[in-house]
Image (tube, rainbow, N blue to C red; front, side, top):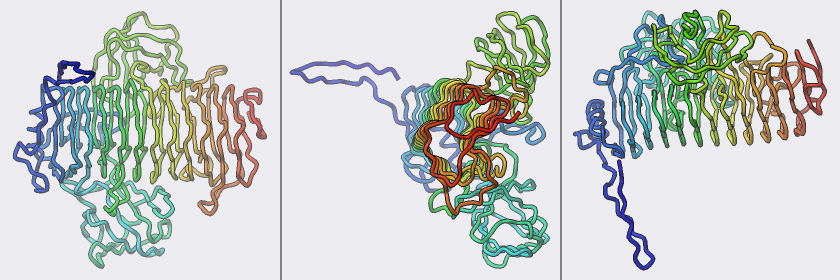
Length: 608
């Protein structure tokens, strides 16, 4: 809203008059009261529509519970990165509770409202919006698509478990069947939560699926069968979901300047909060974790926050991630493979990963990098003059100049315009069987003053690949400082349980070429239970200095002695001035590089 101000000065006092105030649109004005448990979807969408073309409007909810059902939800087709293949989900219609399209200068004020969703739904969508703020909202599902049960008795022949009350099940032909609103479960992905230790490990539903199930008390089931290989114990929580990402927790596409503040995501089905080809995203005081009194241990079916092809500034601050089946935060672009040189300036491209396709990944005016897939070497740059989708899997791009020499089959294009600056500060990552952060962006990255508590894999993974997930690209300026890492990496033992991994998937090392550059790991606290601390590959100007490394006792068994650092094909490494309080002498293993490439005060072993 355009606000005109008149300022009058009288005896040194300045008076400001606002010619127009922000318009508040109350959801209850549309006949909707909280805590009725009726379907709020249609009336909320009417209230959203009333905010259209009113820049500066505030959509306001009264405190209380609002229920959203799929039958009256908005249905729209979206192709979303890292979600599902043509086989897994052939039809990409999303079922959306709160739908915002082409809004500008809008605030959604929840006032502590709780949005409860029924069935598999995408909670909200911001599509082609600008200057949007959502705050003071809690999101949950009446029947989470994650089923949970606490183990009471475990023997090689029998397990007794208390099923979480909202995890609906039936015993059919002596088999336990999980179900929810209009869905059953035939594909099983299981994670075992040892909440006492904070250790979350991969598990299996197979022995339960093959066993005989009997309800012996309300929400208590006895499973009789072969559990000799099952590693759970009394007090552990077995969490089970299917593997199909047919919806996402929330979706933000082609938006600019989105702020999420004081949002509690108590459960999300699918991939989490996905931001795709959007810019300037600021997320603060976000909780992705079960409610403290809910009795559940899982809050996310997969990732917590997923950023694909974004630009501008991404900031994630003062947030808490706890109880996820996949990575809390993943930031990346997408490599598309060159499949055909159509003309001197025209290329045909293809999405390669089975779960990522269907969205426009290049736009007119974008800058691009040509990348050799095997080495991940960016060997030429260009600019897009025109881009169009040929099919769900293929794009055609026209460059503003002739194609460079040296293009070979399998080379990729990376969109280097849509790559963000990233700041992650004052966050807590815990209760996750995978990684804490995945970071692949060539703009400046600051990861500071966070706590990574017992993440099952690397606390931080810096990747880049053009062969598996096709998630681009190289990093060029990363500062990791003031963080605490405790007991991370146990799901990758015994060979790869490094706390931090800089692991580009360049399957051919190119002499003199580094994929990643300028990574500083400084002034952090590492509390380790095993020998590995850091692994890095094809990285130039890497420093690990002024860190404090201490030993955890009575946590998890450590493996055989091995180097704390493994460096492969790196240059200009500084690894010194760290404080070690551990019962072993740390050492460095070098592969495909010489001792001249590192400055260190630790013993060094060089291997081919």
